[in-house]
Length: 438
Image 1 (spheres, rainbow, N blue to C red):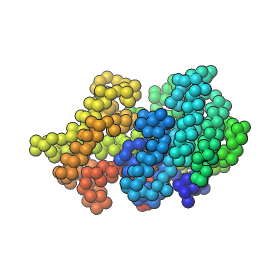
Image 2: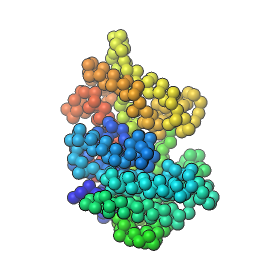
Image 3: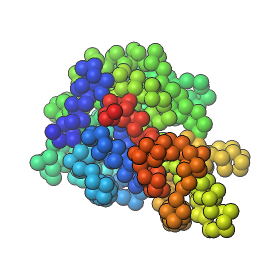
Image 4: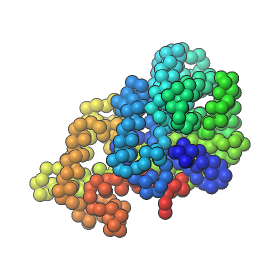
């Protein structure tokens, strides 16, 4: 079976009560992608990797990559670690006019159609259609959600472009599958001041499906509607700088049960980062079986490098040897260039300094490609290759990796240690989704 066929089978098995799911890696960080592919290779599973509409677009997005560039980048990493590219499934997240909300609908949607074309032409096969945002000349109360009918009509128009593009450029490949809906809270929402996150109501989920189905049928997209297999909802999970809203099964029970009234549909859950393994497992069992993870995987990667930087200081600084000072370099770069974190990290200077290092939002993930940070990481790796980490220090700072070395699962090599620590997060998702080989 192709990767997309295996994906659909996972969803069907979930609906059949087999507690199967799939995790989606939402990251462009090279080590994270390597670790994800090595995990999927170990498990003999497909791997779903997604890019968002602001990360990768026809103009380059914030990564500097267009859709075809991202596909080539991911496939290059797959080749470097020996992962079969036939088991890669590429998805586009929140594809629509999100990046152009300040423009009138005509121009914003024209760019959204170009975005969809480029994604489909590049070989993306899982497409999240999201036109839920107000555009500059849309009428209505912006403290409420944009009218479902407008959202659905625009999503159907984008789907039509995707279908036409696939027929023209990708006719020999499996047709795309689609995800609809959005979990993004409306502007002015007060969730940050609440103690819990309220799940989407079952009635709202039903309305999203029904209104979108009607729009697809009106646009002559009945066949494409049969490939709409999931709807994004809020199951009651979220995270902030220093808190996590954990899944509460009892509060989402009605939502969980409602999806079984619709053929083939499952839920897609965003912002599942930092959930417990029990919570992720319950989400999958409750048909929230597509689990998105992004900041947590780069957070784990950052934890690995910070721990190794501490080890480096302990090991080399007393000997008068030059260390990478990686932590200091990252913070200096972030202080000089605030565009990726300043509006997300409120507070005084001390609070902001803490968040730059340790916030669950992990805005530092945007800075890893910086040449100064890249050079500091390279020095860290070189130092710890020339002076291998003593097992006692590895036990002190990275006990999980100490155990892996002791059991012969990995070598005492700094690059293997980084990969293994990053996989701590990914393997948790693999277990929760019943994808892991025990």
